[in-house]
Amino acid sequence: SFDDLRGKRTELKVKPAPDLGTATIQVDRYGEHVVKKVAEDLRQFCVERHETIYLALNLHDPYTAVMCREFESKGFFFAGLHPAGPETTFLVLQYLNNQVMDYDALRLDSEFGKELAAYVRSCDPGAR
Image 1 (cartoon, rainbow, N blue to C red):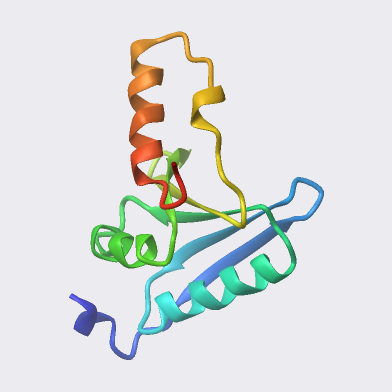
Image 2 (image 1 turned 45 degrees about the vertical axis):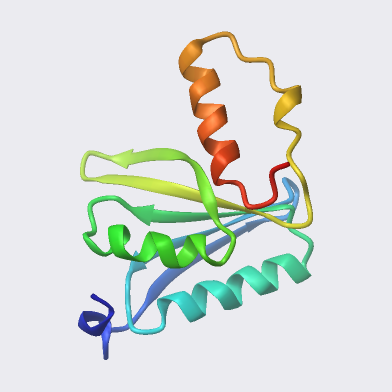
């Protein structure tokens, strides 16, 4: 529950990649103000006109299951998984800054690829 985070410090890493038009916010430790801090970084990256902001959440941290819905309520949605080591795999969410993805333009060769694209589209708050 969120009460368990009271008094705990949030630890984030932010990695802007302006040449790619992206930025990444990585949550290293959930704390009391994690949603607020992520929202502040998201706003700054949007102002700086990063097209896509990624949010990396450690799947080995039990708070990820609880906090994921909070971040989805801010407009983040599923992008994929990133294995970062033997004990670290990140759930990667994405936020599209003033863009609309044309899912119909995707050309996918496998049934799994089509299912995955349909799932991502269903999560995208800006999908048509």
